Image (tube, rainbow, N blue to C red):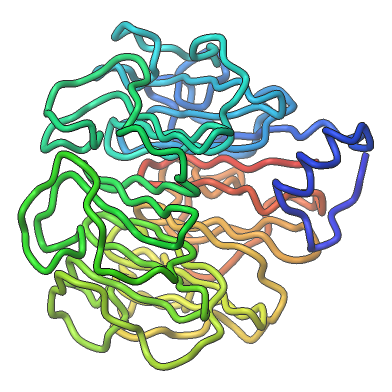
Length: 375
């Protein structure tokens, strides 16, 4: 089994697979809430510590309506969990407690979930969507639910996609940012609160690199490593030092050393290029790891370590991987979603087990469930 060196990327892994030099079997692990079978373990029993869900997985995303979507190294796509709006892409509304392949294609590379909607990008750069479509959240020009993948427009230059609460954001290969769907509090970034049922560009800039949604707010990192936010700001989750909603992107501070950012339920967590970890917004369950329950409307550093690699925020808990391949969690733990073999909350990071082979591919979005991949 290969060891994690701190420079692991999905792209490097895929290249190694294509070259025949990859010998690892990336294993998916899940834990936490499982009331609709969203852990993929063949039952509906909660787990408070990681349990393996097969191997050869490369990408994973879960949604606030208890459904999960994942891609394997061979480019096949799989789904399981709740299916009330057809979000499993199986052309029906039947819940599944074990992974089932979506169609027969082997060209999927990116997946993202919104509130009962799913988005995926193929190797040819096309974007596809299915599931719940109220307010036009699927981006296909109407408000009709879909139970199997439908292409979003005809373009072939989509690079990444992120799901929000009945809305979506995506970045093209030219660095432009596009959003659509529900738009209360201005979370689409168009300087208004008008919903869209098709992708609309956010401003005219071409330097967007990463984008992520929280509950009703959006965060993004540009190619110059500045971080930006907009949308709902009731607990300072925009990180702008106040609680004023914004309907267009506003820069958080003046620093140019942000690496990644993730939005949770009225809070955010981010990693800088120097390996430090930062959080802001609501903190009533210790979700941005300050060892207290005090919320902050500006970024606050989590401890003093410089070994953080990637962090992902959920509704009220977080997962984060370090450069040494260890995995850590904190925040709300009522359904076992922290993976620490109990249901207690934590207000500072605690290591999950003793393994040092976790990849940066961690996923703990809106629901009280968590997933991570080992090599």
